[in-house]
Image (cartoon, rainbow, N blue to C red; front, side, top):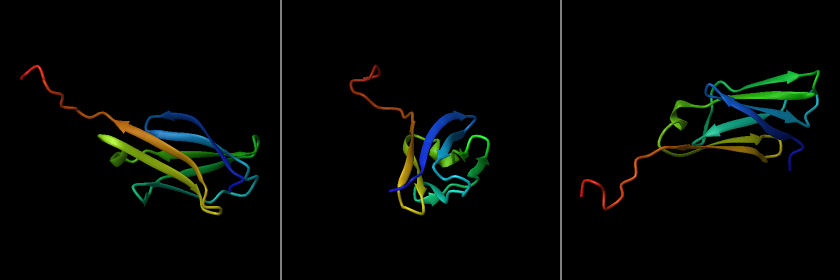
Length: 101
């Protein structure tokens, strides 16, 4: 079990952002993955005045596609999943009878 808490603050311009609390001044060791691969460009910045860390995750282009895609944020120290970020891409569904039948 992790002492860390991750709270989403916003998703804007393809970047998911959240606040990590419970780490104090020690930088949390987090893994962010999509389809079992590390997500590139993840940033974690300390906000000493608020005693938390700001996590920024650029959503990979591969996750912006038809179907269901999940990014996982895991505390490496405890192995606990702090968040699962789910993206649902629109897909064209065939229904029958269709107007063309």
